[in-house]
Amino acid sequence: MSKNINHHQLPLFEFDGSNSKKLDSKDDSEFSKYIVYVDESGDHSLQSVGDNYPIFVLAFCVFHKRHYSESIVPALEKFKFNFFGHDQLVLHENEIRRRKNTFKILNNRSLQTRFLDDLTEIIEFSNFILISTTIDKREIKRLNPEENAYHIALGMCMESLYELLFEKQQHEKKTHIVVECRGNKEDKELELEFRRVCDGNNKFKRKLPFEIIFSDKKVMSSGLQLADLVARPIGVNLLKPEQPNRAFNILKKNFSVAVAETV
Image (cartoon, rainbow, N blue to C red):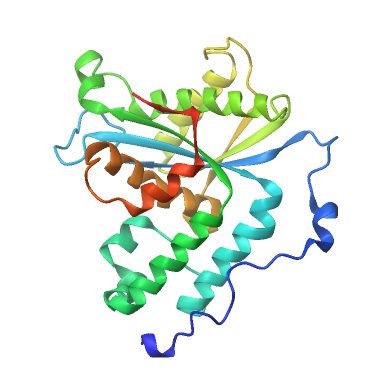
């Protein structure tokens, strides 16, 4: 099957600056110049703390909208066309790692190498800021077993996001935070916690101009797919810092000391 794949058919990165000024965010817009995509790694429940992965990671990928729309989205689309011939699939870290379903083609070692190299190139090229909170569920459960690891991480990431937007002078404009749907009950609880933080239950004691958007997997959001790819390497690095971790090493440049926190 790999013999029929010309992975250089479409170059991943091309840029035509002729329309960039027209497409850039307007200064008088009510919306900020940034968009945030969120994903997690691990189970947020404190009732189930596995020995192999007793942590919860929440990752905020913060993109400048112009860079995201002009460079990242086209690159991911071309990547899919090159390896699958179509773009009607979701890049999911778990399935890629386990070579399941559509990604069974990665059992071909040569193809797997090219696939991972090209995907790595996209992540390296993607100019986004990574805000992440890692929760050690063992410690939180000992202190307060009724806590919700997702809610703790969410509040911390939202506060760090506000600090970043303040630095970029976008803190007074509306910024959308896109999360993946997990289930009706979980989504309602998350939205309630999100609103609570936005309404002033944060370390700044002020309202935060954020709006949450719940996105179904079927939407195939490029931003959510990238967020899915970065969350687990962060957790693995915390648990096994001595283990080679190519993905985390690539992500290091995206972290800012001011916005990366571990609990």
